[in-house]
Amino acid sequence: MNLLIELQRWEDARERARTLHAAIAELPPSRSRVYAAVNWADSALQLDRAVPGAIDRRTLADTLSHAIATARSIDDAKAEAYALGELGNLYSDGQQWQEALDLTQKAILLADRLNASEMGWKWQVQLGKLYQQKGDGEKAIAAYSEAVRTLSSLRQDLVAVNPDLQFSFRDKVEPVYRNLVGLLLAAPTPSQSHLMQARETMEAFNLAELDNFFREACLTAKPTQVDSIDPHAAAIYPIILPDSTAGQVRLEVILSSPGQPLHHHQTLISQTEFDSAVDRFRQSLSLSFPQSDRLKLYATLYDWLIRPIEAELQERGTETLVFILDGSLRNLPMSVLYDGDRYLIEKYAIALTPGLQLLEPRPLENDRLQAFVGGISESRQGFPALPEVPSEISQIGREISTRVKIDGDFTTEAVKSALADNSSAILHFATHGQFSSNASDTFILTWDGRINVSELQNWLGSRDETQSQAIKLLVLSACQTARGDTRAVLGLAGFAVKSGARSTLATLWSVRDESTAVLMAQFYRQLALPNVTKSEALRQAQISLLRNSQYSHAFYWAPFVLVGNWL
Image (cartoon, rainbow, N blue to C red):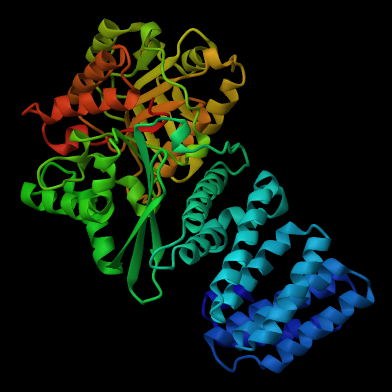
């Protein structure tokens, strides 16, 4: 029936609904009958929404009422909660708000009593929507907050409880977090408590999204504020929300600075303008895009994200901007935002993180830098040659101590051994790779194969995970995000997390390897200096290309991003 609805075969779907309804009525009282009736009612309601009058809604209500009675007759409270919630959904669709509220609250009480979290979060969301309809924002926030807490508690066994949630994450789970954030930021001047909760909700969403990417719950949240990590850093949370006005986007930005109240600003943008700006921004990073148009685009994003908080950043003596990016903004390099005179990278060191909760806030010991460096210079497995890789590796060796494996020696087994060896705090891979929103399509290339994120994690199990022996920096100097994948940077974040590295330096697109060699040499030269953070070392390396006439175009220096700990 659902397939017929999806295919818009309305008459076939109506006939199937009649047949199924009659068959369900013949089933003996049982949980299976109750669940079948509820699932039928849910599908039938979808059909009636698409084709008004296709199903008699009184029949829907009677079917669900009978399912509730059946559940009670067999003393099955879980089945009863399921049917109560669905009947509440039906009444909500018919704008019978009070009946819908009463039924939904009963379903939540039963689900709570049974610890049936896998069901309870759905009815908590339904309750939040009902309070929204009634104009009771605070009660809606309370209901959505409970739903998010329930989903967070389910992260550890989400796969076992409901595998379908993985594949419908964007449709079913993501809107819960976004709706809550939208409610928290709805007031013209949100309270500090609402701003803090909105920030925490986006952090929780990023954790859930990474778990969904990995197809397993594997991340441990450690409540962390930017204050406790770096007094000279500011965390910026751009959040993309749909606006109640059709065709608009709410771009909400929360600024978190050490020892200061959270700052917030909102920009309303037409969906068309926003999508066009993001798409053209991506296109502008090619060498053929006109310079004047490029700078206008970079200035537009600067005006949306940075200009409203510019005064606060300057007043607070901010040196590093840490972006927790959202949605389509994740694939854009923040370093190129332009204030009309300078690029953002000329004013601040920049880092990305999926969330401050994932950070290990420890600086790099610059006086004892040792790296395992590997790469492939020849064409391999359909990927083009990287002829400057030997030069890149040689220049790195002049700045820090290295162990090198190149071309035929850079095998999968060599990487596995390097991960197990505790002597190198830095792993530098000058080889092709790809980041994708699909974990199975996220990999780095070796001479004899590919390494995906799951293999990386498995091999790390043999490494001594003491604080002194952790991987402090993973560098992927020739990787790129998958073409056409707007969520590909999720793969970069996933690779960074799975590697166990405190920081990952990678590229958003494939860069000419001669400019990469120049940038990497400068990066390690800066990194070896005392009291220089990884983000500042990258900033200086990018500026060195920006001010080199041969590589001044953003194509050469902008793709390099630091993910994770910037210290």
